Amino acid sequence: EGDQRQAEPRPASPFENSAPARPTSSTASATSKPAVSVPTGPRALSRTQPQYPARAQALRIEGRVKVKFDVTSAGRVENVQILSAQPANMFEREVKNAMRKWRYEAGKPGSGLVVNIIFRLNGTAQIE
Image (cartoon, rainbow, N blue to C red):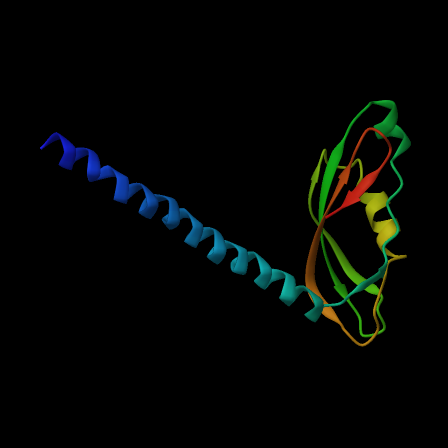
């Protein structure tokens, strides 16, 4: 009886090992799907980084701004709306000024596009 109990767990372990391998392959295909859908929208040609506000730098404040905007068929940015800004009234003006200079591929308009811009103390702004 002791031999049978030891024999039972041995076949079970290969099944346990193979089961996690299946979800990772389906996860890999799921992550590749969004990458395929990205090119259908407007493609950025140039996105000027916003200037780091002098006041924020002097106070050593980092921030995050979430922005919604449209891209015209000419590739220009319009209808810039600040969805959220932390802290408020610190980074918004610089974000809007920079976005006026952004250019996208012509002929591929888009509306309701959203980006996050993160301001770091090293003076950079990261666009996500």
